[in-house]
Length: 543
Picture (cartoon, rainbow, N blue to C red):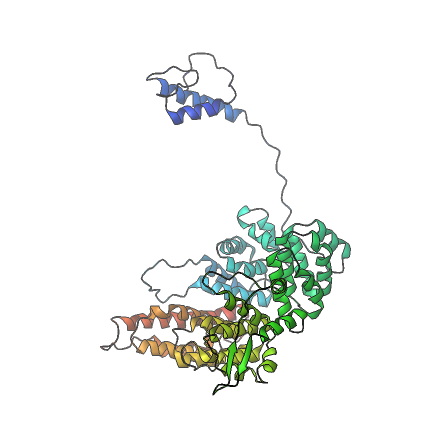
């Protein structure tokens, strides 16, 4: 009950803030508004707060009704089959287990299968059930790697929902033009208007869309406003020229070499060096060729290196970064950049007509081999040269991680990306057969899914060997997780024998056999689940 001993007075400006301040400080330190200090002060403060609350509520005026949102757009794609819709609900409802100690049990990790399911659903061109859209957007909000596939599957209704819920605004940022339709290259007036007046994200999306369809039109659009763009914007726009890069882009990129921004110059130089016939590539070939030669005076022909002694202004203009990272010497830093940017065909003529394998096999004097071969690796990846990639990779059974050119595993993974899928899988299968799985995780990550039969057999055989060796399976949890997602589901029947608990010997770790049996049971269960998922998305597929 509100007790008042005097007529109610009109509220003063800031009365509520005054009450809050008094409550925070305490009535011992501050007298309540209109009250007296003492034992009754707290009660007076509460009475005043109750009265002010009624005043505040009574003073609210009803706001006009908000405008109803426009109806969600139609999705013309065919709906998911009923079984696939039920499977989707299970996948997005799953949460990673919280069990510790490295033991996962035999249940499949459904959330890890969601990306594969989304890719298959998108390949079939299905539309999602409307009731699944909020959960899909929540999943994509928590995992950025899911966003492209989720947004492609969710379709236009995801953008409609994103405009109504701030938690899903990432969908608008990821969509070209913020979810608005982009004009086609033939609509010159709308293209020019959006390019000159659009937001940065809209302009990036517009340039990328035009570049994918009409590369020359995109380049001309960018050239028209290049001088007026901010440095960070020029960098992003220039990066879009990677799509459809061709010799016709060289004049524009040569102009960008004189840009005020070092990052822009470096990107322009990188793009030009990916064009082996460009003038920059020829300049880099001349500089790199002057640093590397074959010495025939030794018992065995040997590559000798004389790294640059300075980084002059012309080298800087062509994208050579003068200051090395901490711990790197200047001369080796400059050399690596020159060799990386030079066309790989340079070395056939410079080093006595030798092909890539012969060049890579030559000894290198004075500990320059690591620097030289690493630069050739980067050049092979940049120029997508499979011949040099094969030479630098060497045979998969080469000892250690070095191969013929002391190439690291990270460099090998990048080199494998220049080969076609079948050759890549064959090389990795040979590597696993020779070296086991301890160093194979990085290499498996670049192989096409599902793995080819030889690669799948190599992985399973290596896991079986590790089990027989008596170690715990946790050391191979990364490879086992990849196998669950990448092994061909047709291999499941071949793994049944591995689900039994093996006999323990004196050399095995206690309980390791049981853990391995669980791991293989989970692998087989997951493979059969993936097979069922494929049939649900394509009911015409045989069982």
